[in-house]
Amino acid sequence: MTYTSIRDLTRRKRFQPFVIQTTAGEIYTVRHLEGFLLTLDHIVIGLLKDEFGQDYERSVYIDLTHIVRVEPLPIPASAKGNGQSEHSA
Image (cartoon, rainbow, N blue to C red; front, side, top):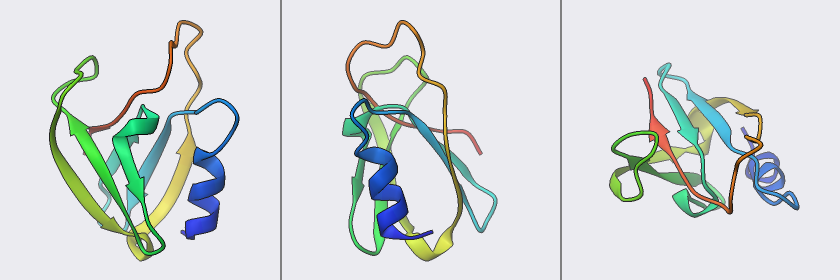
């Protein structure tokens, strides 16, 4: 996966949650704009304790070369503002 393709997905006018799948088969759901940090060669994703959590429990560092799929998720009609991620491997 390239930096540009992830950057373009996350810079839409309205943030759209997305799912990342790694070469190891791990799946990370990014639900909020504030829940990740994207650099030219990696992404750091904050992991929430549960889907409705507000505090990040830990984070995961993923080299972009290990991302095999990034898929946007539907934006919930009741979504208010931007928020963030959980791991569901």
